[in-house]
View 1 (tube, each protein chain N blue to C red):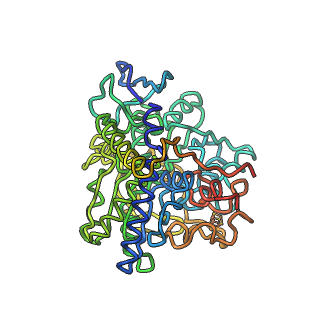
View 2: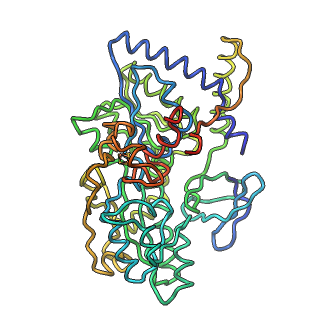
View 3: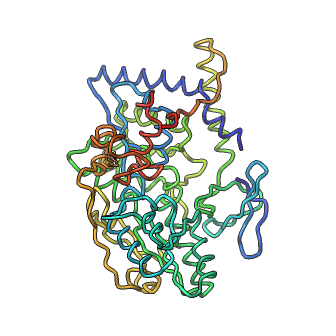
Length: 87
Length: 369
Ligand code: SF4
């Protein structure tokens, strides 16, 4: 979630795909508008390093590409979560 | 952000890991070895069950769940103390998971049905709101959790003190993850070769917190996120460390976790809290594994304020949560699993919390078994 506003009392607003939520920022150092943060129980608990996230995604994508080349299988969908049918 | 969620769940990258893990399993078998990995954190437990990750592992790699669900390790006596306070007319503010956890006799849900005031909060800040709206009584916040939750609760207490609110107190059962891991690793009955270290707890305590396990006990450690690809990558990393006999701490969750952790949160926790011995349901008392309010903040401690004395309480003797939490048995090996004990009628806390091993296995069990 990305910080889109910081009020004078240090409380912030974050955006997740167009929805906005209030968030407390006192547990992270020097929060800035535009920072991505990890939120737990209404508090931002750490900043997200978006460059690291992108690098990891690129790694996973390259592993997927190796697999596709080795097996000739096409791109498949995201792994489906399994869930027990209603009991 | 959806791009990130989908990106961390791609099936063909997962298939790559399946192939790699199978190859690693073959190498382990060749060396005549089998390895035991433990996932420490309840969010990992849930994701592993949900995405069927155990199915990706060859026979030589076993993955057990650890004590990583704070609700599951809370003593029934703690619930009893909260119920006593509710009976005295206090407002009990709690995260939702605690409601149905069995105490020695009843649960908070039953206490609520009997007229007790129990309010479910998403954030500890709700306690402040409740206290403002109900100046005639006191709000007791059930301060249960590991480091990830301790930091926000302490931040709430900081706001209470700054705003000079005096009708909020904490009933604390804070737990620290590292001392519990030390106790498990030292237990001769439990074999742990590698730890899949928690994601969000590590954001607070830092990846360096695991170095003693690698350096002194030779246990492989990987800090991993909890998307399925993160977990598979972590399991592959742990196995590789063990194959090469080179145990160390590998922080694979660098997008969130720093080596030193969140210093700001650590400072705030140190300001308000002190380590103390703590009792863990199923594991017993572990030295310095809890955090309690410093004496100068005793007026915010519900136990001190109301002179109650929480005891460990009485556990249903048939519940095997202790064995499950130590990773000694899988939930389905408990004779009550899915029979006398299921999420609608949990006998033990591992079946209550969505992060509990029994609840996760029940919900996502293969083939509706
Ligand atoms: S299945 Fe129920 S009774 Fe058995 S260990 Fe799990 S929570 Fe306890």
